Amino acid sequence: MAGFKDFREIAAWQLARELKLLASELLARPEVARDFGFRDQLSDAARSAPRNIAEGFARFKHKEFAQFARIAKDSEGEVLNHFIDAVDSGYLSKEEFPRFEHAAKKALLAVNGLIRYLETMPDPPQFRAQSRKKRQEPDE
Image 1 (cartoon, helix red, strand yellow):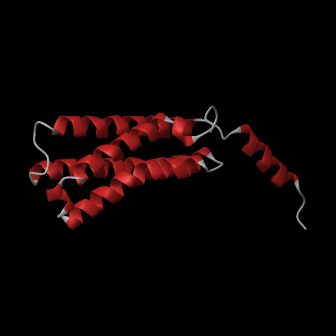
Image 2: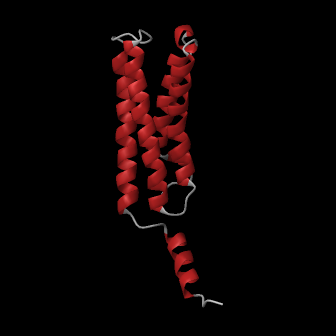
Image 3: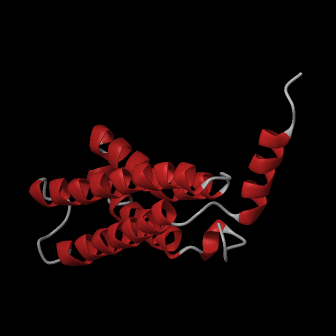
């Protein structure tokens, strides 16, 4: 991706990581740790978002990266739903919820921006040059 040398420079990854760390704060609560299904689902969803952004960054084409970013977006939406479930289950107070909701919404906005960028920008020059070279080689 043009301009970035490392996925950790991308705001969407940084906010996804912050969301993961906030989810870990909730997961550390004893009552949550005992709810195995909830704990495992929240943990998986929270870890998925930064992981998919990092994996997508390693792809050559922006459209491929955008697909991984969409998976990250889905995971962040799932994390927000788990935070709502945490309120419903009494794991998270209504007073605490806005901080968790804000983090999820910030992450979602950032990944949506990343997706829009990736879907509208051409692939990096080094990849376009490789693609042209392959097309010019005669078939054997």
